Length: 429
Image (cartoon, rainbow, N blue to C red; front, top):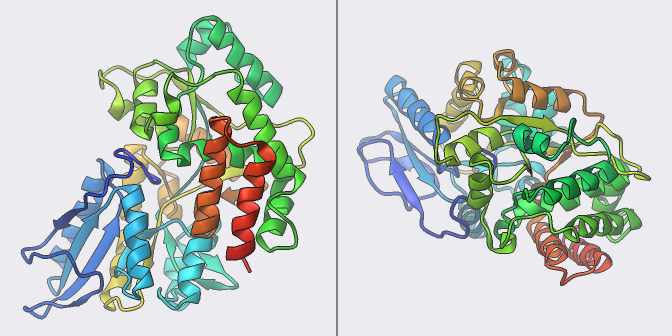
């Protein structure tokens, strides 16, 4: 899963020691009392099958490498970000930790807090991975992380509810999308499920609209400071979002709902659609009260927006990956190679949770819904990494806060864009 906030802002840290030795407060590797190398691994897989899969992979590696002990610390998404930021500021990163690439990772690299993996990736390991996925973790010819999975965001919709509203095919344009929202409402069907308490699910709409309105050029110019996040395309994104908000398309209380509530609505057929990543079908199914009942879901790309400069095939998304802390024991690289091997990546294809990045595992994706995402990503003329992951923390937070203000009608589109620009002016010097 990408960054599931099942228990938003939960600050309880669950530490799982996968070997007999206890403890979990140390972030960097060391030699244990028995002479073993200790790898401290932090991730956010709070639920199965991901959590169980990674635990088994760690156990299997330790069985094959008795000189290595792997300690796993599992944190909820927001707690992970807060905890990681704290240890990074102290200069004491975990040995292996979950990363989404982009600006945050590059800041850590600039500060010398993560290992440069460029040399390690030369040859078989690098060749085995999807280049587009790997590039998210690279800058200026150097790589500071590797991908675990990759995918794109789009609309997952309940075919039965669409049919009840007389919608024969998914919308292709923003105007058609708004019309379909009204059709669903006319049949007393909640058009869209959204857990905006967690903020990140809601930022998908504003960011995707910005991609459609400004395209690659607007974002990169703003990021590289030859442009601005207050430029017209970003303001227009906010205006289009508030067009949607004005239709009251979300469930009652969506501003106080968590992502888990969003999944619950979709999993139990209480909402017609959600804008979410490739993990949605699995997450929704796990949230359903009747897990044996099949979900009649379909997928369609984010609609094009009339008058926008972005391409119709531009995709907004990302995936999970890993980076290695500066003080990690040498065995960490070998474990990461094992973790991202086609053998282990095949679990993603089998469980239909996320899309693998190992080339030899991608061919094993057979689920029709996931194949739709693969098709969308493969046809992308431009791939935009999640704003709240590509951008530095302060700018990402401005995106999340500004977007939430748009949903609450407490912030106007130009003010929301200016919030992001003000943060960028300080953080992207």
